[in-house]
Length: 318
Image 1 (cartoon, rainbow, N blue to C red):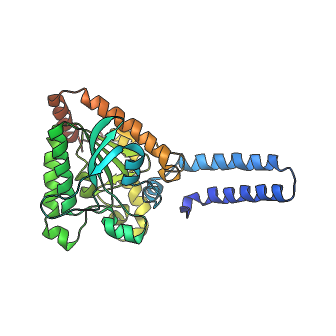
Image 2: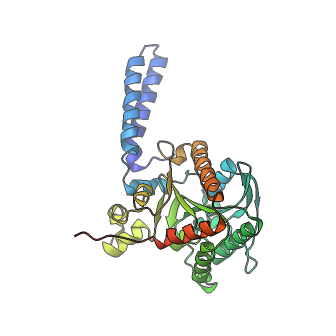
Image 3: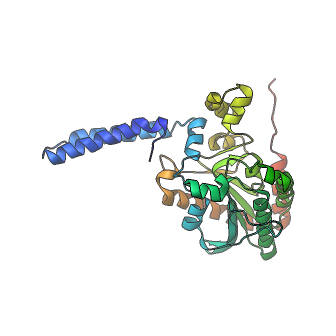
């Protein structure tokens, strides 16, 4: 697994420790003190790096190819997943799987974006960028959830909706816009989790929910840092400054009250420990669903309305 640029000091220390252990074993000498000191230095270095990540570094982690994707969380968090296909208009969209499942004994409908890890899978999943069929399928499943009184869990991980000619011909803007309206008045509890990338309307198309959560190293933004840098600075090399300015990382969005909770990841990112990351997600999502189910339907809809009406408020200085 190729390390990210800011992870190189950690990898160098890990290599040095391995060399010390090999030397101690091959030459039959006691180097326990040296190894212990290096391991402590490794721990301190790892903590220093991951406790002080910049927004751009979090973007890099969010895009890591070994990061758990939607179907990875399905396998670790949910049971009895039964995938449903098709939007009943055009066809199916492999970039947006969804279906029935159980979460801790609670029946739910789960939908989300799915990326691929190799070229073949990425082509099948369209790199996690859904077509209009994906958004229409997701709404069809949400309507089924409403009909049967099941909570909806939306797992967001996309650089954005697919911008191709075919998607435009099949009216992707209308598909996303229709979802925004219908999710606002859906009569069942809804929870969304940004797993990695939360790009623009492609993310928002399944993100108008009672609770919006984010994994610790995910990002949620109207535009990618590279896209913003290309517009404002005329060059993508300024993406780190753009990421900082846009406040797109989970900790910043939490402070701005644009999300409801940040789900902690294992030290080093979710890609280092899929099982632990999934357990953290399971615990938080289950607790949020339990809390939402305590509300009456009128209170649920009122809270959802006021939640999104409050987005974008600001106060000027004196």
